[in-house]
Length: 89
Image (cartoon, rainbow, N blue to C red; front, top):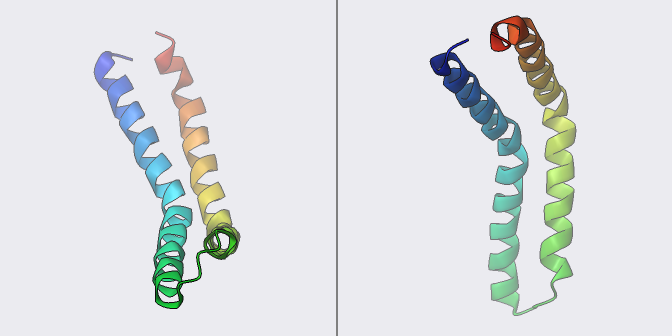
């Protein structure tokens, strides 16, 4: 496989990484924003009030999207194993 093929493979890996991280990151960002607004409105500055809801939101996002994420990762890994002979040239 030439340098072009490796760069395409690296691009696919980065794209998949972003796709797999997106549900957890979006959930944490949205819950963090809501928690921050509520903390600002109520003037309660306890750090656990921001952390615990984010942790629960990320866990829920991973529970909901985990099977799809795993399927994507297994598919990419299978494709990578299939391309392995080309990579060794």
